[in-house]
Image (cartoon, rainbow, N blue to C red; front, side):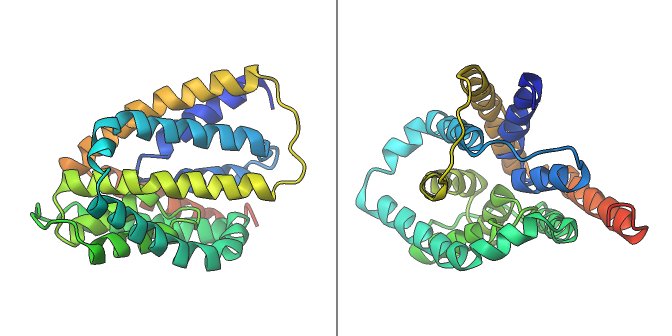
Amino acid sequence: MNFWFFIFLSILQGATEFLPVSSSGHLAIFQNLLKTFKEPPIFFDLTLHLATLFSILIYYRKKIKSYLNFNSILFLFVGTLGTGIVAFPLKEIAKEAFSSIFAVSCFLFLTGIILFFASGVKEGNKKLDLKTAFLIGLFQGFAVFPGLSRSGTTISLGLFLGLPSAVACEFSFILSIPAIAGANFLEFLNEKNIPFISIKYLLIPFITAFLVGLIFLHFTNKIFIERKLKPFSIYCIIISVLIFGALTYGKYL
């Protein structure tokens, strides 16, 4: 892969990591539909995830400070526990789903349906509690499946459970910090052969993904707070239907 394709992947990661359209789903689509597409080196993939993790840390730096108390840390612990309970047993199944364009399209369709119903939920005023934190964590665990948007499912669940939009977004993204960091650390430990990559192919894509991530993180917060979710719902459903159509005619089988 050439340098500009690495930049393209950086922009794709920075945008779709936060938009409710599933970054892993889009990567899986590229892998399955574009036969010449090769999965990026693991170290490059980890670099992009680190970049978007930094986007969250910078964007929510003031809110993160307010989470440095017993109750908030307990909420994050319980939520992360819920994520682990679901994600670890499903990890291998999720890996297999990456090679199934049908599975990806099904999860994208489900994401679209969730967003559609979330767009009509009235603004809540419920305070975050342990039960809500645990349930949101559980749903975050299911986002190991490509096509099932992490932000889309967790924030939507927060809205369904009566959390104010701003609180649902805030908790969802802060809860993703230990999940993203932990998942990528484990992936790094499990990788035996990490190829050398030029600093040019890491530093510039890192900065690109970081900056794009900041922009789209702000945009995602805005669309959830204003409930402008239907365009993303329609997008996910259309993409999934197009894939279903392609599979039906056997073009990509």
